[in-house]
Every structure is written in C-alpha cells, then in structure tokens.
Image (tube, rainbow, N blue to C red; front, side, top):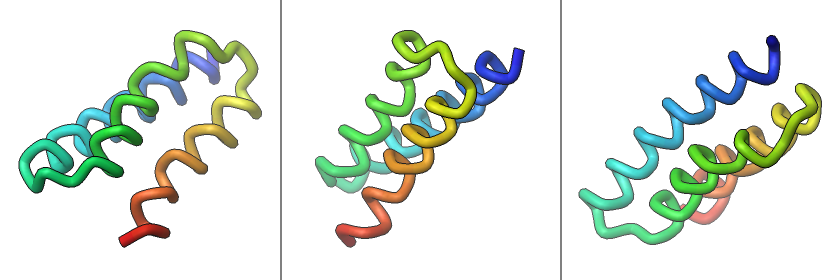
Length: 64
C-alpha cells in the first residue's frame, strides 16, 4: 500500500517537473520528471521507491 501511495506522489511531482522542463526548455527537469512518473511501475519495494524518488527529485536542484 505504501509503495502505491509513494508512487502516486512521485508521479504527481514528476508531472510538475515535466511541465516545467518542457515550458523552460530544460532537459534535466524534463528527463527527471519522466523518470519520476515511470519508475514506480518497475520498483515494488517502499524503501527503494523512496530512495529512487528522492534521488530523481534532487537531481534538478543539484544541477541548476
């Protein structure tokens, strides 16, 4: 159940990253947004979902 909830949350954040990346023509947020929307389909563990999601969310902030 936790994996599903976290997957939905990361998917929503990924959608925001995609919209921002497309609007600003910035490839890093766009790619991270797609990654945030897609990766929960392939990861089943809650802890692994949290770790991957946190890394994908931090990448655009790190490479500003």
